[in-house]
Image (cartoon, rainbow, N blue to C red):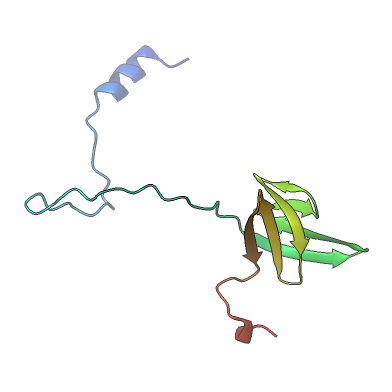
Length: 106
């Protein structure tokens, strides 16, 4: 339970602008139309494990095997450096070290 005095102090405190936020120019600022874009979830492949006859992957710190659900997706393929997720015909491929190119890897 919140102390009523603390609640009163917090509710009457003026809202401060985030100091890291860029200042908006009021004179020539025009509203920018916002379009709704469908974005895929940002999953991060952290490791691919092969051994004992079973392949597995670490995605966002969690352990998955072939066929497991990752959010709305199902893990359908585990490769050497990538995994493939599928959800109702929509595929998503996650790669280890996605910022590197194939030339950078042995």
